[in-house]
Image (cartoon, rainbow over the protein chains, first blue to last red):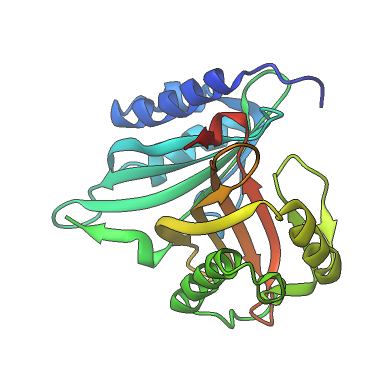
Amino acid sequence: MGAPVLTASDIEKVVEQYASGWSRRDIEAVAALFAPDAVVHDPVDGPGVEGREKIRAFFADFGAPVRAMSLVGPVHISGDCRHAAARLNTEAELGEGMTLVDSLDVFTFDDDGLIATMNAYYGPTNFHTA
Amino acid sequence: MGAPVLTASDIEKVVEQYASGWSRRDIEAVAALFAPDAVVHDPVDGPGVEGREKIRAFFADFGAPVRAMSLVGPVHISGDCRHAAARLNTEAELGEGMTLVDSLDVFTFDDDGLIATMNAYYGPTNFHTA
């Protein structure tokens, strides 16, 4: 990997764009943040989804119940601007009423400033019904 | 990896013990949470510290300025109880006054219920002076 192309401020914006894209249900905009060869594990113990096109399709399908996503607290960014982690609360229509999925998402960034990997940390204890 | 040996509740306790061990400055207790062959990156973009004994020595040295650590918000735990992530605020005496290091730590757990890997996500934007 070369020198970072993103600043900490840029990374904060990417994470905010990720959340706002989900809230707008703009899956194209969300997928566009990812590298062509990005790999997503959502949840982290789920299968890897490889490549922007498969990620877009996965988000459109698996993410269909998502109604809103918001950043909670700061974005935690490594000094080399290659790694970031953030708590992201997702509201999803998974059954009757709304479910809050309290995730913590971990990102790496590539030489083009795109998301290379994303792993979402959540499980049964992080689901809350409104 | 076999079936998980830890429950979500166990993992919450491990993370709490990690934080409380630091707050008590009980580095032995903190190191005992890690597997003999565990690998720590603290910060995530720093060198890997491999093995419990090197981790103990690293924590005693690098962690010497730490005065307290507290869990902020929930522990995010994968359904397979192999992965967890948590926001951990550390108070450290890095110069004059106290510095708050707002980290987000990501853990994996091995077949013995010990921490196999820990990566700490923080950088310059996550340091705050009191």
